[in-house]
Length: 482
Image (cartoon, rainbow, N blue to C red; front, side):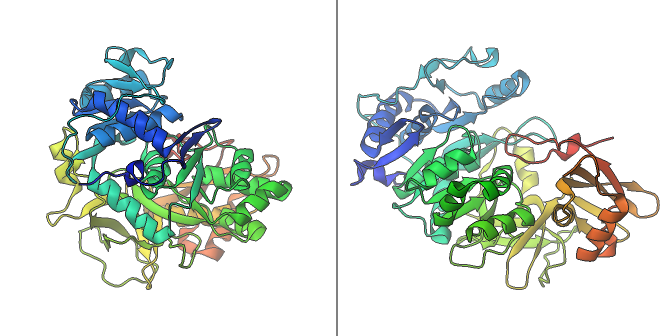
């Protein structure tokens, strides 16, 4: 399989490939630095990368991929127990880290190489033959139902996803991407770093997200912004008072949100202020990207668009029977097939076998409805967001969006709890816009019933000062309890 990054040896030598703050590398400099490091990695099967939001992380991952070695990105905020499990499970030959990075005790027993972003020494003399099925990355899942599992992502999955997104988003070497996402997961690392490098474009990483940084970079020639809903919420809250931010987003070619659903009211506020619609896409660690709203398609708020080129997608009933007629109302589990899929969970053949159907469809565990024209709308996770109430299957996501349209609601999450009559009753967890006068249960129930249907109204409301979220801004519903 050819290199994932043809621009490293192409005619882009003088173009800036990576910029982190005031530090940057051109494609020629990146080729030199990654080549020198790759020469030291070729004898290993896997190497761990201490994935801080720095130039060193990008150089390390590119070097590993150029050497034909699987990179295991490590979350620097992982606790000792979780980190110890990941290192024991993945058994990396060594650990790559930025000079001066202080490692926790769980990582100190590994051989360490400090990454030199200005390294010299050429490429490996005998580069490993690289097949599309060879592992490129081992990315660990969040571990909400047990210890994190290492999803083995092959080189063909990385290439297939990035090329499909290039088709959907008309992504070219002229694009300059800005983001402030962490680099230990698919969104920030694969899409946000490897994506621009595969296209021969440029990425400017903010180090830490700020609306000021977004405005500065987009007003200085950046064309694309990647973010998660919490970031776009901050943007939506700031737009009314920040002319530079309005100007920046108005001029951007593409605004993309992912990793969780972007509430419809934030979509609308951004569109009203800037004239730009945020594009949503849908993916997972195990599948990379499955769907997206196309840049030349209809940016329908609340949906994640159509299946990407090369991706098959279907919805199935609880018994596994495919849903054959899409009406925008019938809820089913998403299953996907395609070159974007992982090859399995490292050291977990049991979990791998359970994740796939007999005919090769991956069971995502995500619940959705599909419109007659094929657009997909996620309504939640099967394990936490599918509520069976009064004989209906209800997705928590659509109720959350409806609640967020109420002026008295700042944040919202919806869960189900046992009910002797309904089976499950709908519970709303609300952060009020004004804690001195929060909306009542009756007010919220009528609001939801008027927008959706009476059987989707909440029966219980809990008021909170904040919702529990992880590093990606996803609400941790298992932490919601009275």
